[in-house]
Length: 159
Image 1 (cartoon, rainbow, N blue to C red):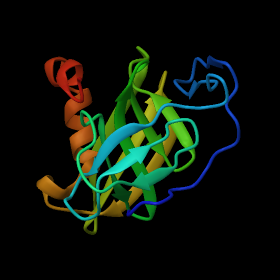
Image 2: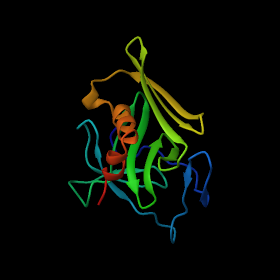
Image 3: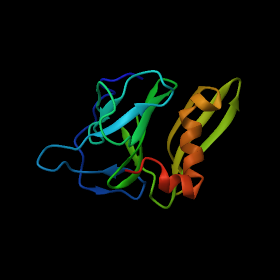
Image 4: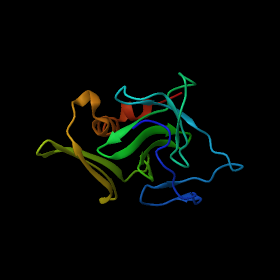
């Protein structure tokens, strides 16, 4: 995935649902952007707007790195930390990874495919199948491994 943009979602509603989806209103109509890097090294640094999902290319490192972006198959994904905590943007959906009942599933699915899923209270929130990649290029595996390790979970993308 290369910025700009990865798309926009409908305006946010205030609050957060029990399914782990995060909905945040903007303050004064402006949302803060976060500095993110391409995960696999392909692409350019970008400012990410968690409210709309927009990525805007920037010329170089601007501020602390608060996330990474890439694709899982044909689906754009941004894994990041904002003031509310660790989060994941999959397509047009934002998922709060700090919700207690949210889990990441990652597993080989046969025929050189990998299955990546996010569940909330045992219900699948999103599921993607994509071509298997080497570990160092697999954003789904990174997300799974970070979420499965409490220390990494609290230390990744901190200011």
